[in-house]
Image 1 (cartoon, rainbow, N blue to C red):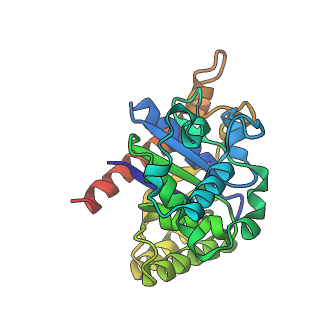
Image 2: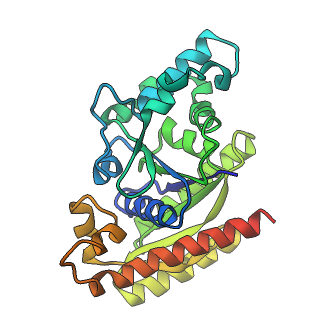
Length: 286
């Protein structure tokens, strides 16, 4: 059964894209079928994996969502019946395979215009309709934009689980609280069944700040049912270098001439996170 995980925080620069990329690469290397959806108008994830996001012949996530919206307007039939058009199906054409071993539906620059394009009340269910057609994946990972928008709510409605990222600073932790508040409101209105897997403390280099932030997250997590992961992602220059080379940290490590020791710490952090996510999901689905 497919597990859909949204990676979120309403503050930018906390590591959502890097985390989505690394988890996708790790699960793919474990033999899992993984699809990543780039729901961010900055299209950074699409760029990091060399996906085509500006080729008119390859639909992006924006194109797919707009097509589904149009089909739902024109017909009362279920989307799964309408979209079965063989190889010419827009969903099939939108899926690109990356060198990292996972598939991706690329983002689009005009996603920043989501408020105008997806303003109808029912548009919040468009991504869920899309994902209902993608049942041959073990994991679907959603990289979200860092601001409130229809796309953000689409992700919360479509996903089974949410992984919230934060750094140790107050602004990032405030972003965590905003995510939790939004999810609670959607669940209260019965629009979403998403479960918060946990909070991930990311990109840390100051041990004292890290300890204080982790303690604060534990207090917040106990009250709101979203405990932080035991795994904490360290800050490493190799993570930035890997992205600049359009590679995951795993792929960067395998590059000829690279000092493999320089990436072992950050690599172990992400591998531990992937294991911890699987354990939490398994516990929740017992």
